[in-house]
Length: 99
Ligand SMILES: [Zn+2]
Ligand SMILES: [Zn+2]
Image (cartoon, rainbow, N blue to C red; front, top):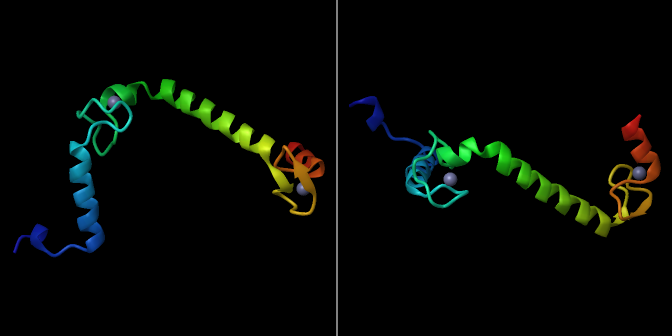
């Protein structure tokens, strides 16, 4: 029996099925292209544009992170002792990061 007929694990089967399916899905980013990079989920065009849209996503994530930090009210994330508002950490903890 050829080695590739040997029974595979369930995980391998699922992974293989996912990869096969994924290969036929359009690019996750632009939803247009199907000519994707090997084992990638993006088309070549999007892959090449990555620095552009990655910067865009980073900016969105950063803005979202800052928005959540401004809305935060609770104990300091580092020491969990001091109550803070509009920030993740109390002043002494922030100072420690800077040091
Ligand atoms: Zn694309
Ligand atoms: Zn603290």
